[in-house]
Amino acid sequence: MPVCLPVQLLAPGEFDGCAAGPTLAFASRRDHAASIGQLWDPAAGRPVGPPVPDLGDWAFADVLAWTHRDRVHVLCGRDEITIEPPSVPDLLGLAAPDGRTAVVAVSGPAHDARVSTWDARTGEHLRDFTVWLGHRSAIGHRLSSAGGLIALACDTDRERPVDGRCVCVLDTSRGEEVARHPSPGDLHAVAGTALAHTAPGRLLVHDLTTGEPLAERSLPDPAAQLAAASVGDRPVFVTAHPGRLLTWDLSCVRPLHELPLSVPPNAIALTPTGIVLAATDEGLHTARLPLP
Image (tube, rainbow, N blue to C red; front, side, top):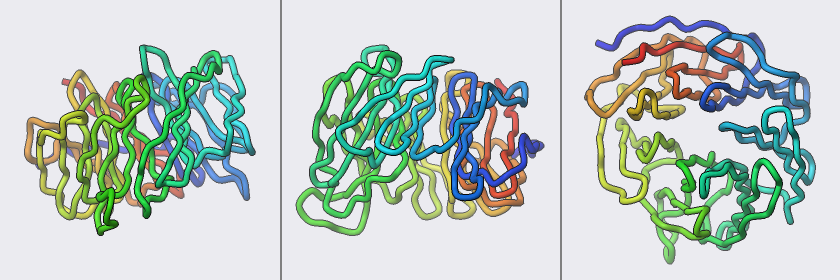
């Protein structure tokens, strides 16, 4: 039986997104017609800095990047820079090519998608390259990263559109696609070099670069959300199910922890320090996992 852990309300409100970095987290909430973001110290349970108004698409890891109108804003500590992309990105993310944080913007059309990268601290344009994402791909799925690699969902078949998806792995250092792995659905997350994705009744874990199977777990219900992080140097995964969240690792076939959550989460995240975040229509919730 999984160990039941308490879940606490960090802040009330209609939260629609959350993401975690090494020590801080970021969450967005709806305020009338606008979206407002806030940095959080989840360990201390308090906000950090002023709110960020007028959020468009956004990404957070060790820095925060977001779109506003036709520009991309990047917040590194207290320093904010502005990037003017050639077009408004369909998808925004962060990666770490060559040991430095980079803003990654993906723009359509999907059959000839453009990937652009900039240095997150200086705004220096680093690289542009194109990638085939398929004729049916919607460039709007969350981008997962591991160092200089990024992963995003796309069509399964290059020539013949078929029912099914895959995960395209791009190397932002080299500016090219380096792998493409079959994936039964759109949910995927990366912890180190472990790529987790969901299938009906299953959680599948593969090596991000080789596609080698690492683990397969039976899920009690379909997963509505998926998050992953390296916690204590081991990949940990969180899945969202009706009334609860479950945590998993590669060593046990059954879930490690159960986190009761009565409200369906709009997004979940996991910090490297073992703090789970859940953004719901009733508030931002947190739970602390016991570290090994």
